Image (cartoon, rainbow, N blue to C red):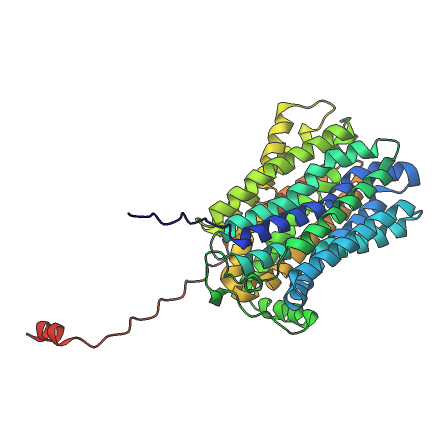
Length: 440
């Protein structure tokens, strides 16, 4: 009698569980990124602060969000991903929760600018670079796109929720406490499921070998981050990537995210409608970023960046006439396109960092991302100044559009790094028969 072998069960590789909990952590932290755009008008109404004053706190938040990233990547190398992410979530929740007691603008800068900026910065895109670099060899572009979409989409999907809560009797304080709860809810999942390296679970990276699970760096976090910057600063690709990402941040997180809702409200559009439009950006951002990750595995990343930045710039030139009290098809078309393009730049930028900087890519990408958030900070504050001085955001939209065209030119000028040559074949001693055949 012939017995059939029992069917083998295919177990899900642990890398996918790590990616899943990382996605949830990024979405939980993203709630904090949604709040500033919704709360500018309520804070103005309650405290009488100018748009520039509130924008200054947002600018500090965005700058620290980026400048923390390279040090966070180094801390993850030193202390592990799980410890850093748990501490970052707790710090972010503390900073947001205490804002309900503030009475002066400097407290907004301290809590929302510094505390929340440092906390969310520790879970910035350097977390994406670290997780994909450690746990994935195959599908890195796709996974980086999915994780990036989690962070960027979460902040936008939270917008209509935050806007609706802010209009209730609890006002902006209830919205702030709600985002605090969202971050705290993720902490147990991170502590339970997030693991630092494949070897911790006795596996190899997805699609890789044990050699791809490199020994962690044990030097000081600050030293590792600074050394990564000094080494990268000697190369032209680093500066081109950093300049392009500076403009990327200015044209998305810095300008559109905090100022789109006030700009729409200036033209008579209800705040909840404008917040819903930004939420739609978040929905389409999922498709755009995942598609960008898939394309990055198959296409020259410089060409992708050229297309993304150029099309974004042209769309910003077309935006000002689309504002109005009523919602038209042209505005919906802009929202859909901007959603597809929102952070589609991340997978190809991360791929170019890996190509040029190898194992140092997470720390180097942290510095590239820092430039992204410095650009965000400049645009967040600059947009508020433009609104206070001119009474309109139009000049801000046009300026961002022109910068995007510059970013397109910078990106395509990055030279590709040639692939390493295959090692020469080692000649083998011919057998007697083959030798006879060769010389016969």
